[in-house]
Length: 111
Image (tube, rainbow, N blue to C red; front, side, top):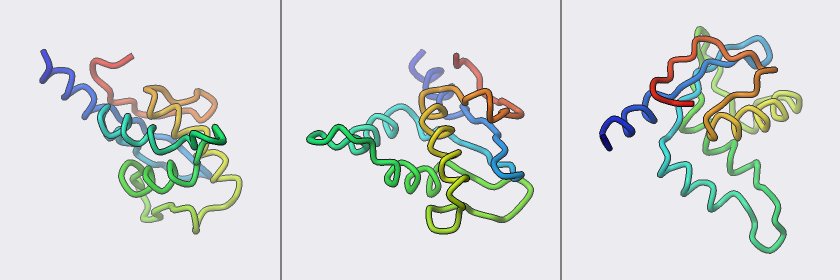
């Protein structure tokens, strides 16, 4: 049973379109997401650190589909940054906001 859950998480991915480009989002798994969440909220100010989230996601979870543009905080526009700030937290929680029209959902055993 535990192996089935591990496989389900490792297969959870979505394809989203941002600024006319498709990207495959690959979930890093529950353990990696839990560790990341611990570093994303400043305990004293209660502020969410989107910079850490975007850096992690662009390095480990966001892959271009049909193009070679690899987004990072320094090479995306402000509007793209704000789109990613909505898309990625929802994706890591297991769903993508419908207004971003995910395509080709390939998850098994999730939802």
